[in-house]
Length: 303
Ligand code: PAF
Image (cartoon, helix red, strand yellow):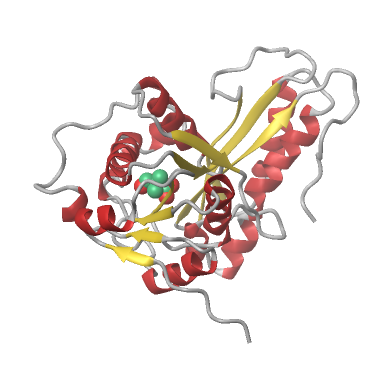
């Protein structure tokens, strides 16, 4: 029988963390999470490991109150620390940084926060005011606490990833921000900690989000008009019972509007947010336009 994987060091204070993480030659990788870890998070850990080799991989587990608005799910957000440690152990994580709220925000809410700029006013930011200021502030603090050389974030939260990249560049934080591909269930649903809120009927309905995105991808492969690809996605989402869309858009990769007509091979992003029962889900997909009529890339739903 193989020996069980060794458990990561658990650090809950800044002093523990400094003791546990000493800067090695290969660099330090950070995977920031809010816990409730699933295979999607495990894939981020694998990306981190591939980048730093035998250097330390640090996973932070911290449910950040600053990024939850009034009436959001801060109190009921799943907290599964023991199971999270098992996931980290199985992936060979060296350190789990699991600070208390007081450790991250001594003295209460910070007086200085990160202003995420105009991109935080659209899509998720339009529905969740203050959310991205909370995300960027805690990520900046985690960068300061852990001092990683690189940090890995999922493409699943595409607007978040875009804003974190922008913050690292605009504020010269010296941390490489690495995006990792969204992991999907067999039927296409993007893996998310919030999927566990779904009852079986809602879980079935939730597939409409990824189906809509894949419809946009398939349509984009044979048109040069973003509106045509978007209409294909809207059609799929529109006929899904029990799914209330917040937004469904096609943008350029930097989340800026696309022109009416695009050149062959233009890259774009389809993004969706919708409520399924009491649960708000988001998803997104890379899309490539073609003018030749030839399909490019894999336009089909995962089987
Ligand atoms: O994506 C998340 O889990 C969180 O927004 C993050 C990046 C860990 C910041 O709290």
